[in-house]
Each structure stands twice: as structure tokens, then as C-alpha cells.
Image (cartoon, rainbow, N blue to C red):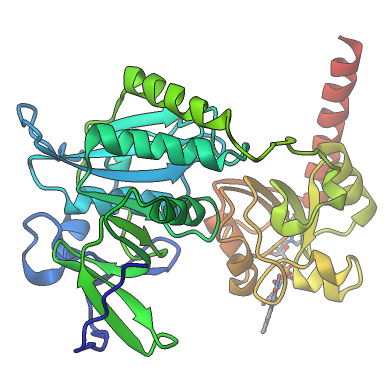
Length: 388
Ligand SMILES: Cc1cc2nc3c(=O)[nH]c(=O)nc-3n(C[C@H](O)[C@H](O)[C@H](O)COP(=O)(O)OP(=O)(O)OC[C@H]3O[C@@H](n4cnc5c(N)ncnc54)[C@H](O)[C@@H]3O)c2cc1C
């Protein structure tokens, strides 16, 4: 939009500082993290493991004179990795007199302090479950008028964040908007041009729409993490006023059977691998749990499932809240397909299987026995629900 490409376009430094996260994803680390020296923050990240108690970024008696604002949409109370990175960008750029504010559309169960936010404005009435672009824009504009942030960071996620950022640009509220940003520092930002062959730089725009993995969301410090109740209510009222003149009518969302749902849209998936012999039992369980059915490539190649059920590098990539894997070894090609799943539960006879290492909860046991027991439990629970 307001993107002045510099004449002297520089090539990307292939040795820019980076960190590798637990999923093996390489992330470029933003300029300097704290006083970490010239290593781009590597030392700071390595010397402060996740578990260590982290300092609060702002001193207790710090008087803030400026503000950086991050904007995110939550999904079932949580921010996804991309949204967390936008908050982290603001936190990393903020100095000792700058507050990091976070505007969340949708509920927030995440710890705002761990996200790096000092003050949170939470609007649970909006978010991914509701279609209210005018209201969200009005809320953001009202908050910008109140907090006067020097910069606003929004994930350029191709959906809600991208839409809101571009609406803000079109409304003329922001002095400048930069989209598809792949690098940021206190001095400026960069975007790719010419199919990624060139990197164009400019000064930091007022509104920065960040691509994914530009910033490491693991911060070496905490924010103050205060939820601003009164401010949230006031912003909510202003947003509500904008909906009265909206040309859109939100007809709500329809519920549909999990079996009819595309795997990549399913929130709960039970998945079978070569360790599942009793396919009929597996399908009954999926049915009883009202979960979508997935499978490993071996199970598909064996003819147990249709090809469209295959999950992995050469199948579907899924992002379910819960992924229940029966008898799947967790080959790297399969794990690629479930990298965005929030909670993975694995059932396997082999405690050393990669799927067990990937899982948040593992059960070492026979898939058939576990499926039978689980199906009994589900049926019992359902019949008790029906009786009451
Ligand atoms: C180019 C390429 C692309 C590929 N793409 C994909 C892809 O998209 N998706 C994919 O899934 N794979 C893919 N693969 C195949 C992948 O490498 C693995 O071979 C496959 O994922 C293995 O499937 P599996 O875990 O079901 O079977 P196996 O490797 O046979 O593992 C079966 C697992 O079940 C456990 N088990 C056995 N019996 C029981 C029991 N009774 N109870 C509980 N556990 C039991 C075993 O301990 C084992 O861990 C690809 C491979 C290549 C080369």
C-alpha cells in the first residue's frame, strides 16, 4: 500500500540469526533481544529456557510514555502461533518506557503475560465465530484513538488478520500500512518483491502485517499481563455502535456431521495406522465420538481407508484441537501433516515410536483393547446423558 521500495535492494543474508523451535521450524530472530550482544538474541534464548522464571520486561515503577499495539483473533480462547508472533514482535521492539497493548477478538484463556502483553483489551463477543468486520474495525480504530500506538502489529494470516489490517489501511486511519512483512527491526521492515528474488526495505510502517515465522514467539521476558476490563467494555460499546449500520448480516454457522467434514477443517480427528486391525471397531468409535476419520498412508495403501483420509506429507495437513492416533508410528511424513494439531494423543505398543514423542498424552497399549474400552465408556456416557 504505502510501500516505498528502496533503490538499493539488498539480498537476504543467508546467515541471519535464527533459532530452531521444538517442531524443527527455523525462525529468524529479530535483531537484538535484550542485551544479548551481537548474536541476534541466540544467547538470550538459549540461556533462558522455557521453564526458567522470566523477568517482567517493564520495571515495576516504570512510567510508560508510548505504546505498541498487537491485534489478534483467538480461537477457542487461545492465540495461534502466528498471532503470538505478532504480540512478540511488539514486545521485542518495545523499550523500557513503552507499553505493549494487545487487542483480542474472541475470548482469551492464554496467559497474557507469557505472550508479552502488558495490557489486554479482550472482546469475546467477536472473533472467528462471528463475522463482524465493521465492528472489529471500529474497535481497533477506537483503541488506536485511545492508546495512540506508534505501531500496530497484526498477523498477515490470509484471513481475519489480513482482512482487518487492509480495512484499516483502506479506512485511512493509519499513516502507513505494510503487508507481507518478512523482517522487522526497530529501524525498519522488509518485504519480498519479484517472486522473492529481492528484499525491499523501508522504515517501520505504522501498521505492520507480519508474515508467519518472522519473529520467535518464545520471549525471554514476561509482560505485565493485565486485562483492562473497563477499557474493553468501552471499546466494545463503540464496536457495537458500528454494527447498526453494517451491510452484512451474520447468519451464524451450521453444525454438520464430522463424517461430512473435510479433514483439514475438522476439530477432532481419530486416526488409524497399521496397528489398527479392526477397522469396523475403529469406525464405530469415530462415529460414537463424532470425530472425523484420518489414516496413515500404510492404512490407506492397505485399502482400509479411502485416499482422501490420508494425513501427511502426501495427504492432508490437519489442524484439529484433538488428534487421537491409534497404531501410527509417527513417520516424519505423517508428522508433517499433524504439525498444527493442538493436542495429540497416541496409542501404540511401542513406547519409543516417534508418535509417542510427539504426543501430549501417550498410552502404551494395544489399539484394539483401547478402542473397545473407549467405545464402552463413550456409549455409557451417552446413555447416561440420554437418561438424564
Ligand atoms: C515420499 C513419501 C511420502 C509419504 N507420505 C506419507 C503421508 O502423507 N502420510 C503417512 O502417514 N505416511 C506417508 N509416508 C509413509 C511413512 O513413511 C510411513 O511409512 C507411514 O506413515 C507408516 O504408517 P504407520 O505408522 O501406520 O505404519 P507402521 O510404520 O507399520 O507403524 C505401525 C505402528 O503401529 C504400532 N502398532 C502395531 N500393532 C499395534 C497394536 N496392536 N496396538 C497399538 N499399536 C500398534 C507399531 O508399534 C507401529 O508404531 C510417506 C513415505 C514416503 C517415502
